[in-house]
Image (cartoon, rainbow, N blue to C red):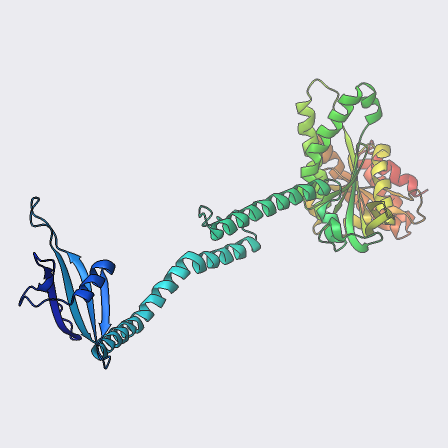
Length: 440
């Protein structure tokens, strides 16, 4: 029985033996026309005259009580109050709207959390990862690459981009390192360039620097006894040991000229110390080559102003150094062969040493080198000589130094007296003999 407030009346009709329908409770019969329509269509609905009520007839089969019983066919009649039904529907609708309104904030919150977790958080993560990669962290891990949606696709694309950028940058680093083998980074820095890409033809800058030249003694006779492969192996083995020594003392190699080296230093002390270290390294190299003819080198240094820059033409450029100071350094090195010494420096390098007394120095000669008109005093650096040679040279160094100072001042008489004193202390001193000739 219906218990809804808008149900006015409920009746149930049961078919009797005569085939007519009558109420279960009172035996009142159902109108045969209505019964036929219900049996035919399964449902029938009729309104009263003022349309305040609607009566619905429905055909049902009752469930079997047991397996041998027959199911009964009944017609249920339900009469509804239309106004009350409308009010009930409206009440249900309004109640649903209120519940929905109360639930909307929760629904929106849940939806926003889902949106944030599934979309916004991964996007924020990608933004942070982009910042890390832009900052140079090319090994930064990319999250969400395992997802199978658009976010995962984006993350995988981002990771692929990171790997591509890392590969490109590594290739560029390798390229720059390769370029630096031909154009030292220190050279670029001296002319105010960050990298090779910014270099233009004619870029130049004036610098005060110490120039070092070194050359292998009797290389021609050494190379004649070697095959071409042996020649290159020997030169590269020698240069491989000298390059680090120069860099360790703050210098850089400007160029190789066959077996010769031209290097540049910020100050005179770095250049002199590098030259002494090169001689020490050469001694170890000769020990390694036991059984082979020992190698000797000559080292010459000069300090002065020079122009560093690029020369050439649009399709072929080279970095170079142009200066009288460079030419003089080369001449000084060539004179080491003449005087049979290992290391010479000019008076200009000597003048810029912070503490000349910390080195084993002595004047060797005052000469007018090829291409120059003014005399230049040359000084031997003999720190790497044997103890006996150092002791002999130090006996005469003070008189030789005073004699050179007088000679440069134009006082040949005083200079001669000091040189004669030195020669008396060591009659076999070639330096005293050479300087004495300069006073003639």
